[in-house]
Image (cartoon, rainbow, N blue to C red):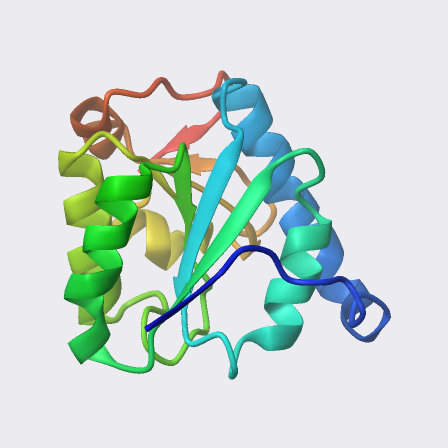
Amino acid sequence: MRLSARFGTAALFSCALVAGDYDAIGKAMRVAWPHVATVAIVCDASSSKSVLETLVGSLPGMKVFVLDVKGQQDMGKALGTLASRHPDAVLLLANDRVVGDGSSAATFLIQRMAAIKIPTVASTEAGVRQGAVLGIGPGTGGKLLANAKVAGVAGVSLPAGATPI
């Protein structure tokens, strides 16, 4: 597992259509939790590089750190790093090959983060159904979705107007 402090934004132009999707996630986090200053992303960084570069550009003013996992075997170490660094939120990448929505690694991560009071955010309805506290993006039809049960476990509030799942 490799920890990256911050990705550059060189590939922003190649992913322009995706940028708006992640702008909505950044805005939803700022509205729901104005205190959020640090966001962690757990993913296979090499296969998610263009999405990561776009995403980091969509979260101005937030410190983003990436935990690079190559497989399930890296999840324990990633969780240890998250517990010690304690980010304000963890963002899921929908199509990541290791921790993408619907994967057992995503479920494992979501549950462990809620238990230590770190909310997760997704860009799909599947991610919210899986346990992410908030979700908005192409996989939600542009609606802000929320998982009140997990929000309660993680100890965070839900933004007004969010559709509960």
